[in-house]
Amino acid sequence: MRLSQYFLPTSKETPSEAQIVSHRLMLRAGMIRQSSAGIYSWLPLGFRALKKIESIVREEEDAAGCQEVLMPTIQPAELWKQSGRYDDYGAEMLRIKDRHDRDMLYGPTNEEQITEIFKAHIRSYKHLPKLLYHIQWKFRDEVRPRFGVMRGREFLMKDAYSFDLDYDGAVRSYRKFFVAYLRTFARMGLKAIPMQAESGPIGGDMSHEFQILADTGESKVFCHKDFLKFDPLQTDPDYNADLKPLVNRWTSLYAAADDKHDPKKCPVPADQLLEARGIEVGHIFYFGTKYSQPMGAQVDGPDGKPAIVHMGSYGIGVSRLVGAIIEASHDDSGIVWPDAVAPFRVGLINLKPGDTKTDALANDLYVKLLQAKIDVLYDDRDERAGAKFADMDLIGLPWQIVVGPRGAATGSVEIKRRKGGERQEMPADKALARVAG
Ligand code: ATP
Ligand code: MG
Image 1 (cartoon, rainbow, N blue to C red):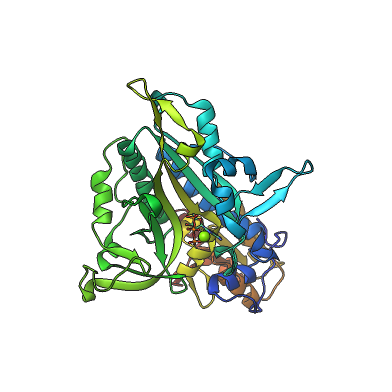
Image 2: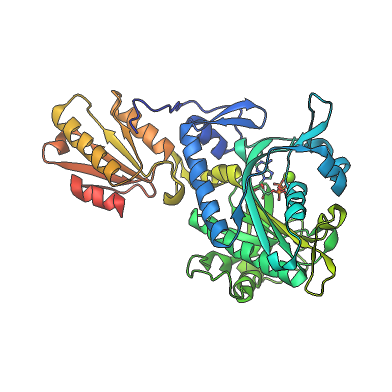
C-alpha cells in the first residue's frame, strides 16, 4: 500500500479525552474514530490490526475443534424471556422495538440464541460434544464506557459455546478452550495468565479469566512469578488426547484477581508473588444446565432417556485486544506491534521522492515485497524525513526499511527493528531477506 494513497489520519496532538496510552495512540495513529461514547468506527490501519487478531482467534478455535457460525446481532426478546434473563440483565441491555411493536434487543451475548439453534437440530447424544463459536459485535450499555476500545459499548467478541452430555464431557470441552486460549494469546505476543474467577451460582472451579499484565489494567492481580517462564507454544496440543496434565500445569500455580485474592490465605511466599494490574482479555465458564434446563435443550442419552445438556461459554474480547496489545507493547514514540498482529509487517520509507536513484531502489523494493507477499506500507509521500520517521514510529510496524539518496547510490538501505530500535545498513536484497525471515 502506498501511503500517498492510504487513508491514515495520524496526528501529533495528544487527544485530551483519552486517559490511557492505548487510546491515545489509537487515535493518534488514525486507527479509530469515535462515533459516540464507547462506539467507534475502525479506520483502515485499525481495521487491519483487528482482522489480524480475529484470524489468530479463528485459527485456534478451529484447531480446537470448534466450528464457526454467525448469529445475528439483533435478537428477539422472547428467547431471553425463556431463559429468565430478559428482566435480570438490566440497563446494560439495549432494548429495541420493531415496527410491529415486537420486543427485540441488540445482543450482549448469545447463550440463548445458540441454545435455541442446538435444541432445534440436535437430538441424540451421538452428536455430542458440539463446540460452536462466532465472532460478532455485541452491545452492552456500560455504565462507564472508557479507555477507548477496551471498554466500549459496541465491541467485537469471539464467543464460543460447548454442549456435552454430562459433567465429564463438559470438563473435556472446557480444557480444550483453556489450552486454545493459552495459545491464542501467546501467538499475539501476550503473556496471558489464567486466573480462577467467580463461577457464579453453580460453584466449582471451572471459570477462568485470562488476564494480561499491564499497568493500566482495571483489576489488581496476583500470581506466582513462575508463570512468566511458561511458554504455551512449546508443544502442539492434541485436542483429542487428555488435556488434563497440560491444564493442571497451568492451574497448579497460584493466580487471582483482587476479588478472589486473600493475602492471609495466599500460598505463595512474598518473594515469589507478582503483584500487578491485569486486563481481562478472555473468560471461560462452565455453567451446567443454566440455559439448557429452562430452554429445554436435551438429547436422547445412551440409555434412551432424555438428558439435559451441559454447557459452557468462552469469550474473547477481540476489539479489546487491540487496545490491550498496545498497552502491553509501546514506547515513547508510539506503538510497537508484535509481528503476528501488526497491520503491516514493513514500513518502507523513501526519503527523497523525485530523486531518480532513490525512487528506483525504493520502488524496486516495494514491488519485491509485494511479490513476496509481505504486507508493506510504502511512504512515498513528499514530506520531511522527520515527519516520516515520526509517523512510522507512531504506527509501530515491526520493520522499517529506509531508502535515501546516499545509500541508493550504492544500492544499500537502512533497516530498523521497531522493537529495540537497532538500525543497520545493508544491501537492499539482504534487507529483503531479513524482513522476510
Ligand atoms: P468485564 O468484567 O471486563 O466487564 P465481562 O465479564 O463482562 O468483562 P464477558 O461477558 O466474559 O466479560 O465477555 C467476554 C470478553 O469480552 C471479556 O473477557 C472481555 O475481553 C470482552 N469484553 C467484555 N466487555 C467488554 C467491553 N465493554 N468492551 C470491550 N470488550 C469487552
Ligand atoms: Mg462486563
